[in-house]
Length: 137
Image 1 (cartoon, rainbow, N blue to C red):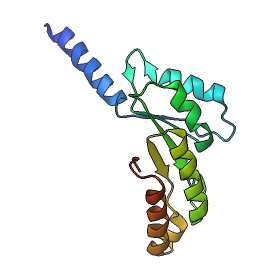
Image 2 (image 1 turned 180 degrees about the vertical axis):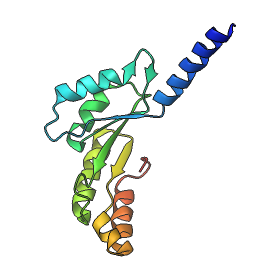
Image 3 (image 1 turned 90 degrees about the vertical axis):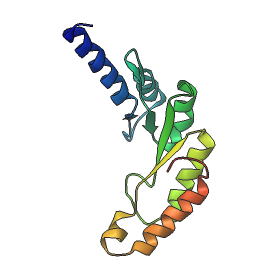
C-alpha cells in the first residue's frame, strides 16, 4: 500500500467503527412510521450499520420490523420529562419489551436526584430494571 491508500483504508475502517458505535435517534413528538422508516433506512448505510435506532416506545415495534437483527432497537422510558413517576416509566418499559426492542434508555428522575433524593432515583431504576430483564438498560 502507498501512504495515500493506507490513509484511505484506515479512514474507512475508522469511519465504519465509529458508525457501529452510534445510535440514530428520532424523538420528535409527531414522529410517524414514515419518519422511522427513513431513519431505519439511514441506519443501513453503504458505509456500514449503526449500533441501534432509538425511538419512542410507540414506534419501537415498527422500527424492529424495519431493521435486520444486527441493528438494535432502543426506546426511551420516562422521556422527556424525567419525572419520578415510576408507574409511567414501567409502562413505557413494558411497551418497549413487548415491541421486541433490545435496549431501554431511561431518563432519570433528575429533579429528585438534584434535590438529594437518591432513594426515589434508585427505586425507579430498580422497577425499570425488573420490567426489562435481559435487555440493555
